Length: 383
Image (tube, rainbow, N blue to C red; front, side, top):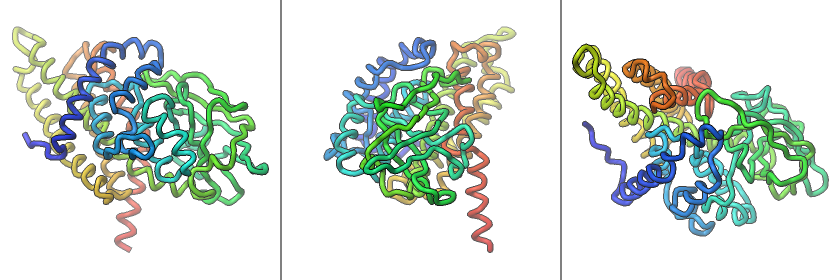
């Protein structure tokens, strides 16, 4: 098999540590968290103590000063064993970078050290009941009153919604049409007028809390503005390539984990007096999914390299997300089939993986949006 060359010795040691943490602190308890619909805050603090959170945040803000690859390792190790409950990647590799890139020094000093330790948990609120992939249609408003914003609106499908202490809210701060009126504002969840809705009942990722959020004239200081007023949409577009790469990283890790698990299962499961793996049909199907996994891994690792160099553009990220997430859905279906009836039982990892990867084709922009991004780039080049 092709050897991965992405990790330095430091990254490999870190990956070994993260794998041990997942095996001892997460996997034994994950089934209960799925029943509860949420993970305990204690696991966030333990993750912080062990250096699993906000790995790319600099030492000036209490972070370890690592790079994106350290965060990608955490994402991979959780995805490989279908431990989707602790949404560390959203907190560490999406929320924290918004603060790091655009937030004032005061906001960074207030929140980043607490996010690094797991004391404070972050969320981002973009999606609304009538505005999903089309962010320009969002209706949540932040009206200026003196030195405050007064925020009113509703958000839905918000990951970390039940646990979060801070929410970066995409809202309209002026009447400019489309994207021009959108800004990002940090809202502390202990402010009057903020309310969490129900913990949503999802097909998969049952241990990860996902909520509706309501803002009823929530007053926050204008100093909670992330970046510049009216540039929220641009800031979102600047950060979305990393979010989409993270979805691709999760997808390939799930593929690899479940292909290995399926190979082991077919070698141990007997039918008609011999192992399922001894049937030619099984070997051919395993050959297909393994080949797909190896080829996709090479491409995703190359995208990670480009991102570490600051060279991954929006089209590359869209291609990575589109291909990895769609391949994951197909591979999970094949692997579930090779498990037979056991594959449909929630106690088997493949059942959870099958349910969870379906969301990856929606999160961070739907597959249709990815095709639109890629397609526009092709048409534009040929005009």
